[in-house]
Length: 183
Image 1 (cartoon, rainbow, N blue to C red):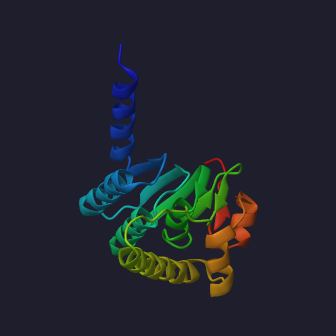
Image 2: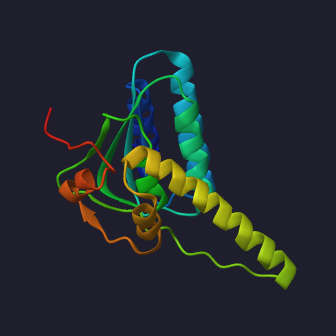
């Protein structure tokens, strides 16, 4: 009998063979590396679209930016579907997938509210770190404006205090193109 880890590994392998990558749990540096590497490997294997299933509470801005950078560099279309939730950087990843191929499951919830972080250290280092983080956030907002077609001030506000949106509300906000239906 397989252990839980063996079953998870086997499931991931089977999904990968079907050109599907899952982002579940926090979108931290390790998850960004695994998702990015998986997407790049599938991109190198052929021209067929890749599916990305997302159920994540998000995570640090830097990890989300890394996955968005990979999405922007791929040659194949990426079909992203939010199942469960996509919050903060995870919602950004869904929104930045290939236009026309972004979906939310009927019961999914999405929010652009980015995770709060803490900075520690001497004042000079804090000042530089805060400026760097704000610059990365501003670039991410610009990328979201391009992905959603929404005004910059609305997108920037949603990254600070955005509510959880239903699948239908996420369509209206431009985060996804449609509510997913049974195939």
